[in-house]
Image (cartoon, rainbow, N blue to C red; front, side, top):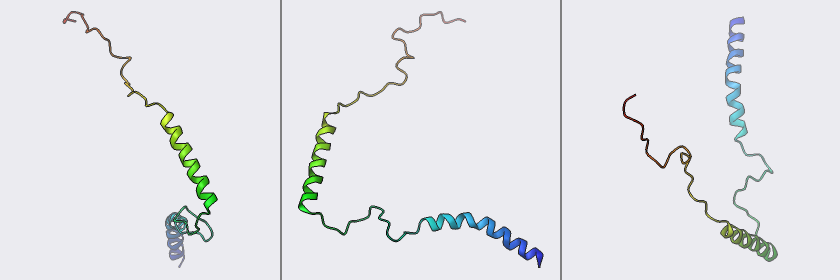
Amino acid sequence: MRFRVLCLLGLLVVISPFGDAAFAQLSMPGIDLGGPSTRRLTPEEKEKRDKIDKAYKQRMEQIPDKAPADAWGGMRSDQPNKSPGKR
């Protein structure tokens, strides 16, 4: 009898972390996770959102493109090594 209780307890200890991860994936009532919105936007909200999007796009166009980085650029020399071949 005692052996069975200890086995059951050990099994619960091993399985419990997996149960927590599975429980965390369940959707909670009243929490919006960014899914499709069922509410329609008012004309004022739509205009405000469009204005923000337009300002964002204009600002992103003003950012210059970066030149590709050469991580080994400082390690290379322009001149080939002119040391003798023998060491």
